Image (cartoon, rainbow, N blue to C red; front, side):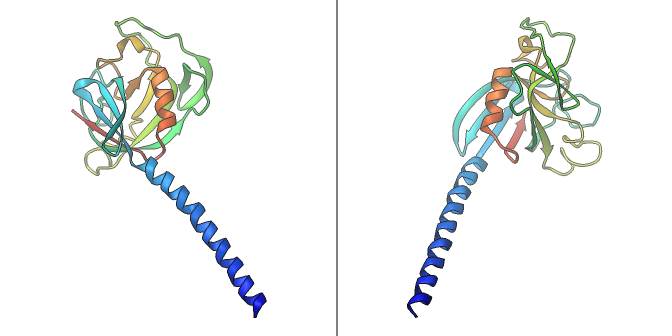
Length: 192
């Protein structure tokens, strides 16, 4: 009987420990899932929030072709999105990505306010997925299939004004920082 009680007590202690371990992990995951991004196109700003608390403000560049969701429009889509895929973990600042692959080359950064000729994707990629059927998800309007990203740019001089081909461009140092502050699943709200 004593051995039986000891075994039950030991079993309960192990189960309690496992539950507490996962409760901590779940709490951390819940805290991270409370983070979200608000992109305000008219201000060319992006805000990182945790619940209702502003954590960071970033200058950005959205599409020089305006707002829209149609495939081939090169416009920045509106609505609720999420980070679907993160690309570039550990890549050096200014690394050039081609077709979402590290090219092994570093970009020369254009600091002039006049846009550069190349539309390079640099440092990190947060590939977005639209969450609203008929607005940014579905045939002919799908943000993910349109390859809408939050990414670094070789054209840092154009940050703060519309200059992209649909994506949300950031300073390279900022996109590296943001990459580490958000997770796959972080919601992104793009508004006018």
